[in-house]
Length: 452
Image 1 (cartoon, rainbow, N blue to C red):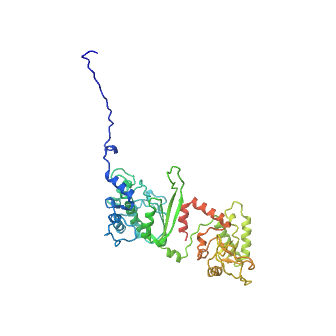
Image 2 (cartoon, rainbow, N blue to C red):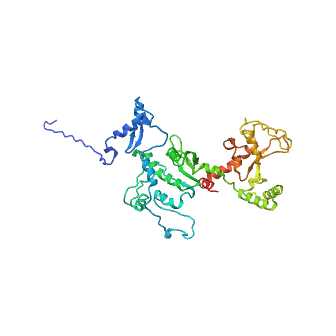
Image 3 (tube, helix red, strand yellow):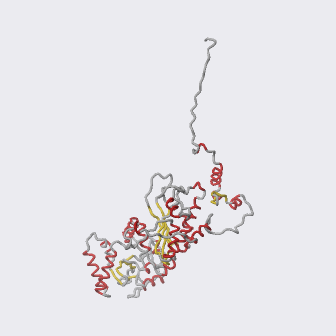
């Protein structure tokens, strides 16, 4: 090798450009890491405060055994930062006004409907003067707070412009933002948005008014709590479940359902009025109308009405919806009825003497026991005309079920009338009812609440 030979070595490196907005360009969020570690160890320690995520100092003291912690300030209830202001928002007068839009309307002079476009909190305030205590049914489909929902800032300055920007109808102004869990105010922001609107909605309802609210698992607990406060826990009517279909990509369980909370303005008033909600069977109205026609024709002669009703059933086309309810062929002063088993569902029911009105002998007790929990309740049902005796005491009587149930049929001290499964003869009825509900869930529920 020659003495003067030189060696050269080169090294080439490629450095990827990192955008300043990329997470890789940011330092680790130590605060977020601390929060996650605390959550993992002590979930009850983390709460929401004015500035976002906060530590409940009293809980921390209790966890480390601090003896200075007392229960003097503890009380049951749902509390969050901003609740006082949210309550005040409902009491603040509106500065807006409703502007008619005949040019954008259909049948302006004759329509019976009203659609209002605008910020819903402002609109609820504007409706108070004309519609307070006049509304029978309110249905609300609020944001579900999934992290992608729109959150109302309740900023009423330049109201119309603000509304148009927030609904995406014009560009510019504040950017629409989601209520993300990372904000640290995930539930607080949602509760501050909902609370004043629920308070105002209650003011619009009549004494027999009802409100329905759709929600899913993200806020069902908080919505139930805030509704208990705004409407009163005693006015809770039901939490309905709506099966909406399932996905097969869930890691654990597939949540294929949502909920509808139902609250009354005054459940006690509904009870005083003997309000009864029942879905009318397909064809039931035709049966009822035929019964009324026969009642006018034959007066109090129930036997002739029954003959006419049975003949009418026989002449109906096979596909007629009333054909399947032909078991409602007996009649009394409350309309067409059918017989129902009077034994206790599932067996093990009460046993006591029920005297036959003709033989004055105790009727045979059903093997499963009587449907009604006491002899007094049985006698009450008999006096109401809802128990039908057979020819003699050798067979148990049966109870009546009317095509249009009367309140007394369900006003029983036996919880089995509501909670227990019906006897096999009623399975067809129940399946038909379930099909109706699945087919038209929301309109069906709403119509039940507004029939009277």
